[in-house]
Amino acid sequence: MIQPLDQSIIELLQASADDEATLGFPVNDRTFGFHAQQAIEKLFKALIGGRGERYKFTHDLEDLRLQLEALGEQLPFAASVLHELSNYAGVWRYQEPDDISPDRRV
Image 1 (cartoon, one colour):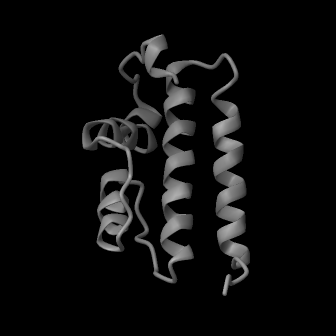
Image 2: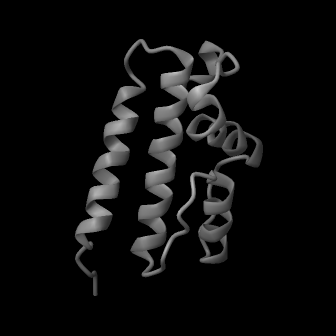
């Protein structure tokens, strides 16, 4: 039987979609990277919460990916990409980030 989604999971999914929508606008690399990181972080946390588990209070996407894999999820993200994006939630949120080439904005 399918269980209804908890309101906090719905809110995470909506917030993730809002961040993803930002990626379609012409924004600088810092803004693009931040919203890409946030979209994935919120989606990962919604997936963890949807499995009835508590997610870590972290911006580290690799940490969240490992938690999801421990729950049986297999995600199509390379660790290097997740590590790079995680920097946009911390280090590069306040410092000048590396350039994101146009082909990586997909």
